[in-house]
Image 1 (tube, rainbow, N blue to C red):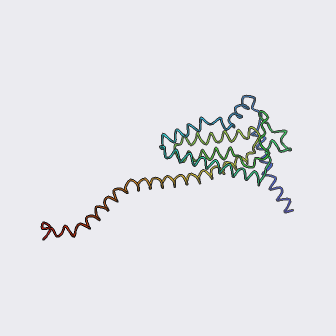
Image 2: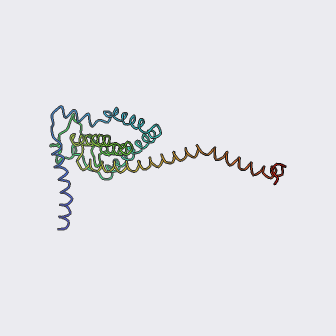
Image 3: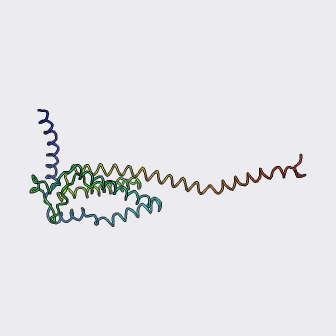
Length: 231
């Protein structure tokens, strides 16, 4: 009996995930199909990414822009690698490849994705970028825009039928985790660079002062014997 209850507890969330997918994955017509297909495309958002880089540069300067670009690259690399490992060691068939429901899943332009989709890389990358950039820009309108964009891209994966809602949730949590980790690394690197620049800026003055002080100590015994310096 305990084994049966355990099976029921494991099956129930899975069935809920399937039912939620079928509720969110519907035929919205050819116009909505093409919109969601474009929204899900990676190259679609290149101008948007360039705008984010420009905004970081204009508000925070070149140094923060370089650090931001590096941390975004590391964030995406970590998120993609984590998602790949999850798909390899915790394989979960995509809805478009799962025989029990694939006939009921609405697809667009024949796109079905790869065989496994345990964690959504789209959700991980988008929500990771949204959090990382929002922590840097720190403007409410920007945060709303970024998280709204991430939610739209993530939903497009459900609309296309290639991910369950739980896949999106896991990808979102993964992206937020890596974004926080690399944001802390960015802050640490920025503080170290600032400290080194301050040290380099003041070091010549310190060295000059110490040199003059040493010269004065070396010359003082000689100067003290001059007639004008005697008591």
